[in-house]
Image 1 (cartoon, rainbow, N blue to C red):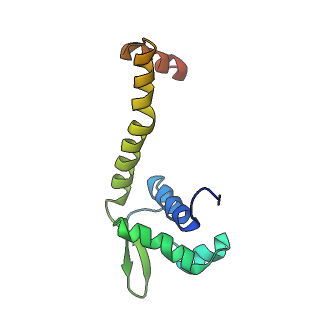
Image 2 (image 1 turned 60 degrees about the horizontal axis):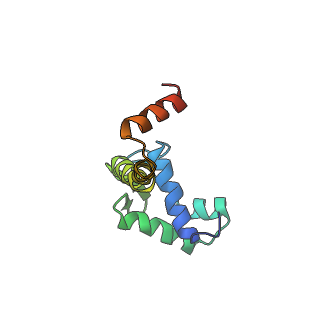
Length: 118
């Protein structure tokens, strides 16, 4: 946990990462409020707020009396969202800077290939 974001947001983000990484699969049970609050040593209400973010994003669903589960399609949606954010946060600024200093796109691609050994 860090101080840059609210804890409930960090809980939601960690669960999103687990979904993307395949550690939590579609229709698999998400750890309960009690499990998460004990594991991280935080208040259940904070965990509940984080889980509510995931419900609001339609990434998890509740089975009354059983718990919360990863919704089918959640991983694909999260991957697409992450790719879009990656494009906006890294690729577009990279290409803008390359253009500013006179590098063509093909040159950037060659530099990336060289750096990765491909």
